[in-house]
Length: 129
Image (cartoon, rainbow, N blue to C red):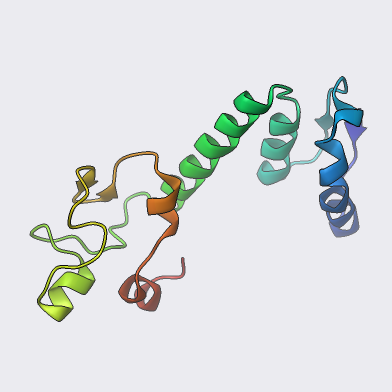
């Protein structure tokens, strides 16, 4: 099934129909698109994964990769001397990062979506997250 996306109206229509595309009605359908939008291509690739567990793993890994690419080379938590912005500003340790075994100078090195999506108030003041 070729999905034609040529303008903003087609994108909105695609997102409205996404629920149905994931259902068992389209279980044996292979989706294709001629759109140049990377987000749409990622969604189409996910729709073509028919096993639910494999699709969930793909979505999880893809989301982590997107977040990592958006923050690549940035130290948004401001880690310095093993303390983040909030810990340096308030002179005491709190938050999840102080006990995390995966924390590095660049932030979280694991593929943990909860850690990547959680940002404290100090980070939200300094960056658009």
